Amino acid sequence: MQAKDRIILALDVGTREEALDLVRKLKDYVGAFKVGMQLFNSTGPEIVKTINELGGKVFVDLKFHDIPNTVAEAGKVMTRLGCYMFNLHAAGGREMMKKVAGEVEKEAARLSISAPITLAVTVLTSISQEELENDMLIAGLKVEEVALKWAVMAKECGMKGVVCSPHEIKAVRAACGPDFKIVTPGIRPLWSEKNDQKRITTPKQALELGADYMVIGRPITKADNPKKAAEKIIEELEG
Ligand code: C5P
View 1 (cartoon, rainbow, N blue to C red):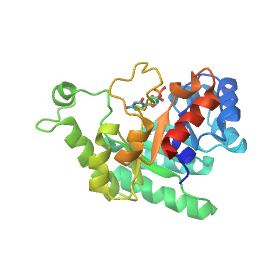
View 2: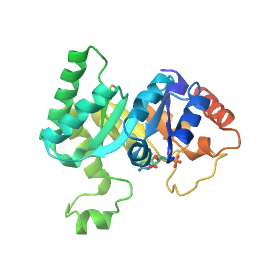
View 3: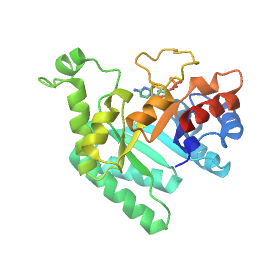
């Protein structure tokens, strides 16, 4: 994989115009674009097709969490839309993940297209140890242990990878093997502002820890020269 293909640009904008402007500008500098709840819900699913038509791949970040049949049907929609990756909550359980993994493959085969990379979100990095125990009622385990166990469960269910914090990459890689895709946010080059990210990792460190893809937003989108910023990150990854 080329260094640029590892970068997933977070399109954290509210309009189609802003998003497509970034896609046109940066499609040769990044591997894919992440469309999250803000953009997807503002523009509708056509945004995925439009980005594809402009030559960009799309990670649809909607974090599905529902009963197996409902999420499997949503996964089939994602497949037909032509997204490159989409995600769901591992907390939805084994049956849900198995059904999604199977139905996505079947739908892709039926249409003779490539199947999207199915990713599981384990424990959100915004959840503290206290919340895990007192509100989510998962007692006796550390956040990192739950995240790792759920990553392993996702793999056993046929999911293709996980989204996880840079701090979990090493353990997930060791437990889930070389082919399991690891996507990580919380990335900041040394020259970039931290914004609201707390525990950050540089692109190079994330790569060395074993990440396949890194989600990067503001260090590129808010840079004075976004193309230069992306190029600088690519150089760092290659160096
Ligand atoms: O601008 P920035 O590089 O901080 O964007 C990071 C992207 O990754 C945002 O879309 C954010 O929602 C997402 N993300 C994150 N931390 C997580 C999960 C997702 O920053 N733990």
